[in-house]
Length: 104
Image 1 (cartoon, rainbow, N blue to C red):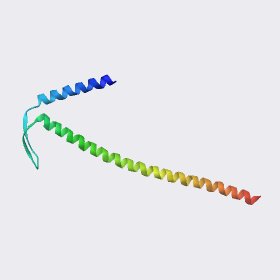
Image 2: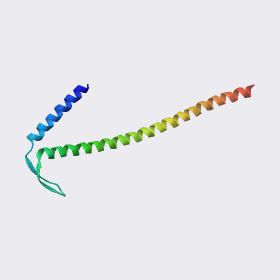
Image 3: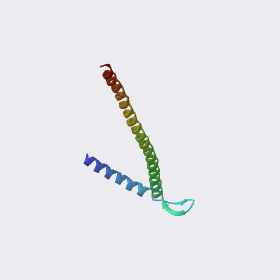
Image 4: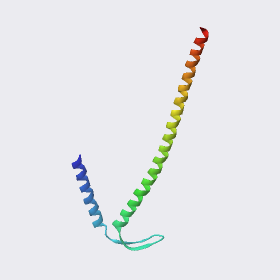
């Protein structure tokens, strides 16, 4: 398995190098706050990919935090309901014991 991972990493690096070598034409990028005159297409695409990954990671992180909070609330509710159920069971047993003692 380790050999497969190493082979996949080498193949990915080779493909990445080919991508950079084929897409080295300069382009002008005009952002709202800054203007770039000479950036390679591969650099712009890599920047867009990185930005997309970061935004996706942030959105996923927010979802995970929300689900963990819900999970924590549900576990607390389950614990409270379990305690309530045990209390109700004990009340029924205590009533039977007290009735048995009164009958003697």
